[in-house]
Length: 344
Image (tube, rainbow, N blue to C red):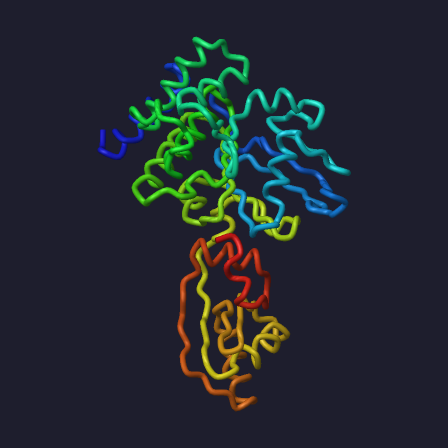
């Protein structure tokens, strides 16, 4: 067995230890959708937040990506039956919401970004209390709390008051709270926020091992590297609508190339004209335009440059990677570069 296989096997054993069990979850067909939206419209405070949202996702780990205000938190609330859609249908694990909201919440472990660690007690007490809230008896909840914290490499810190925890320690405690009752699915909201690089990698590897064990995971994140590391499928939200829903491999495709052209007012002069000619423009600003590379698009580009007597100071060929594909899906053809931070 290779060292990588050793690490994976060890990680799976740690993940199983969280629940005190020795066998993985029953295998599930990864193509079977476990998150389904059909024409969902959901308002908050009289304002539409999710608009005609439809998606069917069956990946073992699904990444939820979008800018602040895109509707990610609202979507999570809808998946847990906390928020009710005005129209449309929502199903989790085949269960219809909001009718089956209690069962979905029983089968889910949730790690919230802003809240989640109970103040006034120690870390192990917070995790134990989370277990009791799911129906575990106090003795069993305490046993599982220690197992969860052991799995996350939380040592004597578990006995310290949580109000003195670092951000990274709070994140580990919150993840332990989401795992203590051995949930079938995990909903993780920005799980690596505030972690240093070693801590972030350790947490990502544990979450990946939980995925390998058979749990379904939804991870809401603005860190694209985390989504690429963990996820099979993505749901990209933009202003409450679906910008992309599907596998990462389909999103990235064959990793086509794009051309990046720079020069005085080049983007301002060429972006619209290139798009009108049928060239796929990926992003632009005043002095730069990025477009899909092909013999035809390059011919059109130079023809427009010559006709308008424009100056090209640099032309680069760049292979599209995962981040480029996400940005392209989020911004759409011809979007300005000011939107390139969306989802990061």
